[in-house]
Image (cartoon, rainbow, N blue to C red; front, side, top):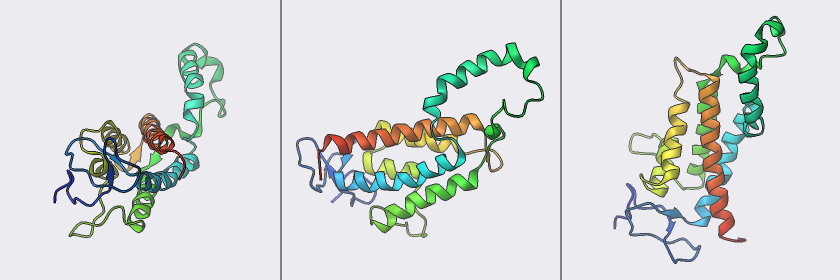
Length: 188
């Protein structure tokens, strides 16, 4: 029986169904069961920890400040020359391998919880592939996950600050969506 995804084994909750594990015959966008969403939320903490370690976490709090700093940078660039404390250390970029390790930890968490499995060649799905399988290719969260992957693609193994910042913004959208879905379901 095909349930709208490649493996047909992911539990989903369709419209009007309880939060128990249920299979959906819908081939369009779906919302996984609350148990599945909780596993994803726990796994996303691996990636969130990486962004915190890299110094990217909290960008939303500083976004307006960064924008104001960028606009005023041209006006005051002469007076700040030579001051190493004015420019943040992370402007050089980030090592893609470090991000891949965080994503691998996320995927390993999902694998341990039997939410995903390796393909015949022994490879795990991509980050975006997980969301495409669980929510459907056309779901906005799957498209956001794809954008996340595009931003962390990097160049010669290096991700520039702006792409890392965009990846973190996409990550926050995913995490917020998952938390909202869990919150809307009520207590366990």
